[in-house]
Image 1 (cartoon, rainbow, N blue to C red):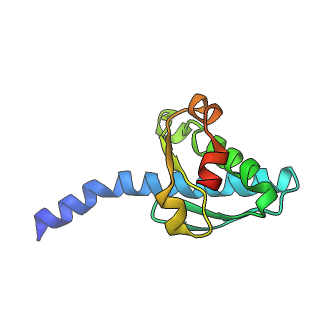
Image 2: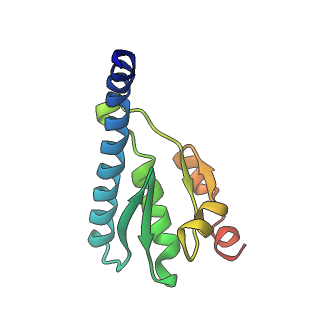
Length: 119
C-alpha cells in the first residue's frame, strides 16, 4: 500500500504539469481564434488531445494556430517544447487516424494540409 502511494505521489508532478500544459494551450488557442475573428472553437480535451470544431473554410488556419500554440515553449517546464500530433477529420477517431507528428514550427511549415484534409 505504501509503495503504491509513493508511486502515485511520484507521478503527480508530471501528470499535473501535463494537464496544466494542455489547459493552458486550450486557453491560448481559444483566445487566438477570437483575436482573429474565427468561429472555430476548442471545445474539449480527450486525454492529451484538444478537440476543435471548425467550418471547412477555417480548418487550415485553425490547425495552424493550434500547432503554433501547442508547439510554444512551456515556461513552467524550463521552456520545453513538446512534439504534437496534428490530425484533421470529421470526428476524433478520423483525426487520430490521419494525424502527423510535428516537433517544431519548421515541421508545421512543411505540413501538407491538403493531404490530411483530403486523404
